[in-house]
Image (cartoon, rainbow over all chains, first blue to last red):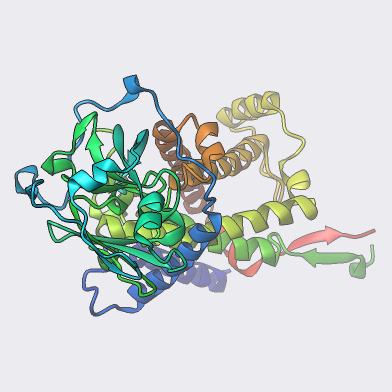
Length: 240
Length: 207
């Protein structure tokens, strides 16, 4: 009986020690250039989750559409800086640069983009933090734009560079989804700087941070280019 | 009575013990990282202190959550299949009636509820069936939050994305409450812990 008690105490102590260790407030991904064992494990699982999401992605499944009275008003600003810091791009001199596996790399001005067929959508933007807003965006279908500029849509990645130093990249299949647009208008008027003027990616099949604002350059290629948040540990695919 | 006719069988067979401890690791990690995610956009007027969160910041919280979701789902599915096929659920949780639950709570309040080793009383059956249900709800609502476009049927089932976050939170809270009661009972009856590790022994008369 005594021996059993000792074992039990040992076991209890060990169980409690395990409990304490597992709840220690460890910080992961705090130094992306020097990943520790936990970071490597999380990277591996995140890459696995990218593949799962790619398999789960159905190009014919549309993100839900909402009615005008469901639009979130006032809209919610969100970025890695304060609203006063939002980059102001001169719409008159704006030129969207193209790079990578795209045949016609002549930069596009806003007039030319507005001359293309425009698509409007009232969709939900879900932030990685958990909150969601509903907004109305209008612009050019990315698949239509790619067709016109002769982008190689067999490539794996589409990469975006922004006026504020933000950058991100998405998979080609999601880029060609019918609801993926280069938005020029938001809530019935041209985009304003906090919401991504003059051109932003609007992709309702992905989380908010995969919708880069004030896009200055689009390139297509097979080399993974990551992203501002993705390089710090957010899951790359981040599909909805 | 021939001694050889009495054979010992474990209180908890090894697959159950293995799944129990894998689940313990998964639940702790899922709740800790889930609370970290909660803190980024709280549903209520409170956030959780770093002592009970895992990851340190939102990105790592999500990474832990979506890494251990697989352990939790695969292990949980294995438990449901094993429990169904071996008759574990049928033997341990059924018959089940709410009337028996009420009767036994009344008996317990008068300290007249007998403890039968290896047999769950109705209150225990209610708790185990309840936590299995909460586990199913937490997974369905979680998938609905993770993939509201591709797995829209799970999101709709939970009343839409906005409501699904609350469903997910309360299902988690139910599981957390179960864990607290479960641990309090282990502390109250410490002899129930070693069999979950070693298997323990019940003398099982075979005829």
